[in-house]
Length: 160
Image 1: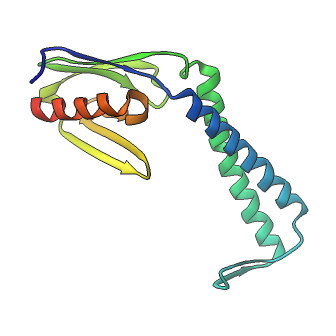
Image 2 (image 1 turned 30 degrees about the horizontal axis):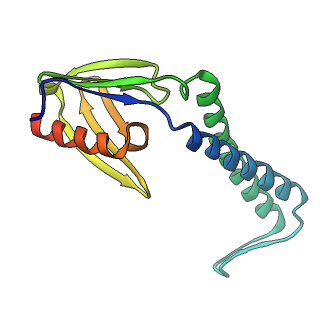
């Protein structure tokens, strides 16, 4: 093992957050507009055909989902989560990391209390999930950097 104490900076990627906000907001606005002027049926690969009223409802639901993602991005931006810097600290006996979707607080967990370590990949996103008695802690690779994420995964696996 490299050292007794390892520390990493953990913060949201502001550029990715703004891109998400713009794309989700534009999608919600476009789908919402299209739903309000829709007067046609919708055929999905000729497997499912929806009459105009059902197609409008589907478009409104898709606009609502896109709007939901835009609102979440806006809340992250307004709450200051994007400008705050958090720390991940790994010692021989414990791990301190931000907990919660909006990273409102740090939590310290004894390494002996970690019940599972899972590396997940969804598209280009990589997540390290830790199961603890206090709930699940998720560490996103895009918030810490590729090299630091790899080092953290390796060190955690070696210390557990």
